[in-house]
Length: 399
Ligand code: HSE
Image (cartoon, rainbow, N blue to C red; front, side, top):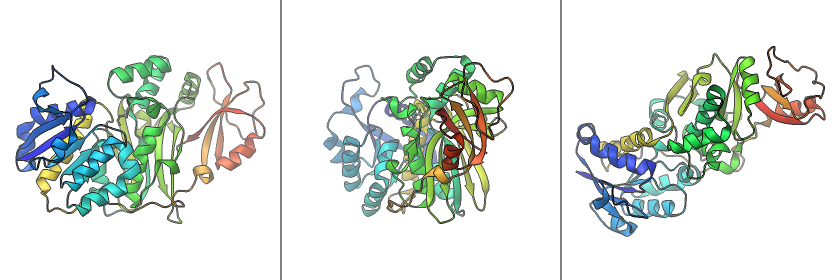
């Protein structure tokens, strides 16, 4: 019998408790033994919860109980969550988390602490919600040198963009819906400004390329500047606008990692990823391109990934070597995307300004703005090509 303690009883924590309980028998069969729920660490009372008899407010109860084998950290943030994670690992308990901020900022040291204590630190749920991506990337694609990762990694923003373009909702109404459905972060700024995607692409890049990539090294642009005009224009030109996290290996071995909305040709699989769904394409030098798709946020999809990690730890047993490890980062590891050539979408701030040389417009363009595509060039060359014209929005085209 393995015993679990859950830290946090929000959207994900309550989902983990439910899934562990509801699917108890199947999970036991696939894990090689039963998995019990010992404690749930909470900050307030939940008198109506079916799990209220498991609830404690003091982490040291969990830390000092030798019967607890696995701690599930779904509190979020890097303060108490980091402290409790370190204490759990030092106490010889494996830790499973959905906390992308903590893994993106401190993954290397926490993985090392887990290794030193002979336990595991797993985080399948930190990227892509219910989509299996961490384990496939670290195990199933182990034969490959990974060349590129491009992902729609945030359910909230993909939901907002879809509801705006398909449902005609305002940005604010679409965000409200995403919050009501439990997709958004406690502070949705992290979603709409791309910070959540930044954390997730850092985790994928660290895993794929073996060195920690820190959020502060990643240029990040969210979706707050994308208007309904931009979406209508992109659709008239045969594209969809999606927020992407991208990590690319350069020929000199360094990396370009960035987050920005892109125009994606409507024929590309990523263009068809809608609502809360996420998708990640990975290009390896042996396998070519593979794609992972599924629900990227929400209670039960995320709980599914958390419980899969718990099951994996129970099945592999304490003696197993760590499933995942990466080395420390470096200041010069990540190189700006400015030199990366692509086509560009430009919406001018001044609707009446003349178009620059090379600009390609579209028939049936929507009213209310002046936009065009520019041929493939670097960001520096685009700036020169635009001359003194002020841009309202500049987005890359993913070709
Ligand atoms: N706020 C996140 C999202 C939750 O919308 O994708 C899952 O990481």
